[in-house]
Length: 194
Image (cartoon, rainbow, N blue to C red; front, side, top):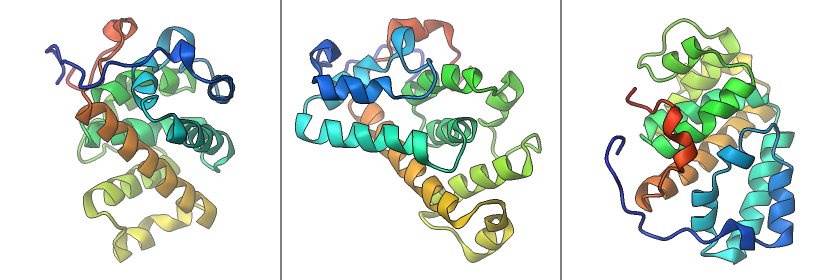
């Protein structure tokens, strides 16, 4: 969808009208790159169509980012890989600034787009990305892949990885299926096809 104008299927609601609790949840997000200029207002405004599920989901999402055993940097590598798998330019463009904020260099941004993964990631990052690939392509983790990579993660971190992947299946599908428009501030960020 990159390079062509898409028409959103739902007009995002004004996130300024989000409940005080919802706004407080979003203030807890780690770092600065999902706030201010780069806030994902269009997807949040789209998710506001169901306020009964929005706050519990936001609380789960933000709490997961803060409490899971994966570092923010590791989470961002997985999220970017999910954007590639689901061809979600919205997720990609929103998470490049977060990835950069948490120390992911241009070389790794380019590498996370490649299939198969080039050998530029440390052993733990490679395990996270290979297991992410497995979860997306197989909807499972085959025994041989599990045996090859599970030693890089604690059991709780494997659960965290599955949780993170599932969250970004939701975000990627929501952005793609509802044709959520990328905010103008992201024009300067290279997309998936650049």
